[in-house]
Amino acid sequence: MMLWSVSGIGVNWGTQASHPLPPDTMVRLLRDNGFQRVKLFDADYDTLKTLGKTGIEVMVGIPNDMLAIVGGSMKAAEKWVAKNVTQHITSNNVNIRYVAVGNEPFLETYNGSYLGITFPALRNIQSALVKAGHNNQVKVTVPLNADVYESTNGSPSGGDFRADIHNIMLTIVNFLSLTAAPFTVNIYPFISLYSDPNFPVEYAFFDGNASPVSDGGTLYYNMFDANLDTLAHALQKNGFPDLPIIVGEIGWPTDGDGNANREYARRFNQGFMSHISGGRGTPMRPGPIDAYLFSLIDEDSKSIAPGNFERHWGIFTFDGQAKYPLNLGTTNSGALISAKGVQYLERKWCVMKPSVRLDDPQVEPSVSFACGLADCTCLGYGTSCGNLDAWGNISYAFNSYFQKNNQRDDACKFPNVSMITKADPSPRDGNCKFNIMIQPYYGSAGWYGRKPLGLTSVLLIFSLVL
Image 1 (cartoon, rainbow, N blue to C red):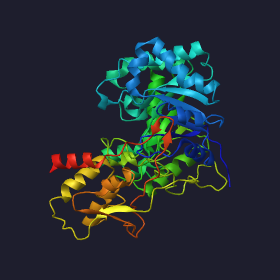
Image 2: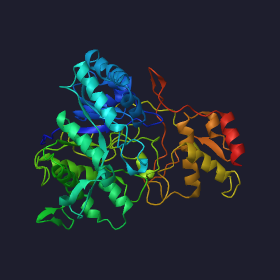
Image 3: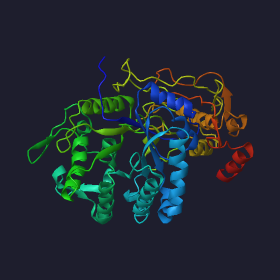
Image 4: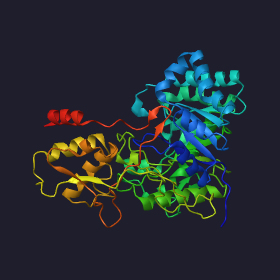
């Protein structure tokens, strides 16, 4: 089998899960699958320490809610660097190469909340890195959504930064250029398809089946190339034609929407890997592309405000099992290697009692309660569990809450409508799975999941709902 060389194929490791796998299991997953780079969204101590001595290049993150702190105080920035960079490089031998300052801070949905504090945070962290002697090894960057640029003519050649943030973007880009740091952008063809019913589906993929878009004679056969080159044109137009670009996030979800399924995700991610494997790049940026797939693993506690698909971006399920065949060009088998030694809770499920009528007045508030506190994003039209009957939908909701609360008996006490069973209620077609939760991980800071609600809390909320 051919092993191809990609300039830094990496992966995003998000941790917004009620029951994350232990860091040592996750790091083994990274290593078994040949990932050389990992992008984090925070600076969790156990995570970073476990990445020590692996050689994996790490992009460590500063969350948006910390930008004001490190941007408002040089001392706070130095303290952050000492704790989250210096300590891990010197004591734990972690190969930290980037600090991601914020995460898509200029998203239009944030209504400008981080506009005034992102650059001060970037500047202070860079100064702190210089003071600590890390500036040659560790570079700063700001992962930005592709909505920070737009096209004035509908083609890549019309690319420029969004008018309302043009000045701050130039300030940041100039700073990145001066510090020999890269521009990091997150590109999501899936989101374009999700938000625009008229978006040409084939243009999201890399098979060459789409009608090409001509930009002054330059042909674009997929949205990724066109999007990246819109950024390249924006940089060139503003005097930075050679600023390095990293694709901080790119991927496709597997559930929660009609276009979010395993076949589309496999097709997109495999297409992307093949597309960048030859080092061709794009018309504006020929050559190897640095990219981080989004994402390594599903996260059942992510906000679903953008859509139910948000909890299903992983190439692995919440318990580290490969979702579909994907050749990253990094393993001898040419396939993903699932997590090993995963510890599960007991084989039991919480379901609706067969004797209960669907119009029982306790059913609807019980389901609303369960879905509000657990994860029902696999239910609904076009999803993996979209073909369940009413009993199946209700049982799925009950079980999700039960598992999230570590199978506690009082988490299956929906008033006279639920029961615990040892018979797997998953349909036989194999598409929909009633999960059994993995055992909670206790790190140095205690249990990493959300604390279970006790019976008193359950009954109190029921009294408010009913």
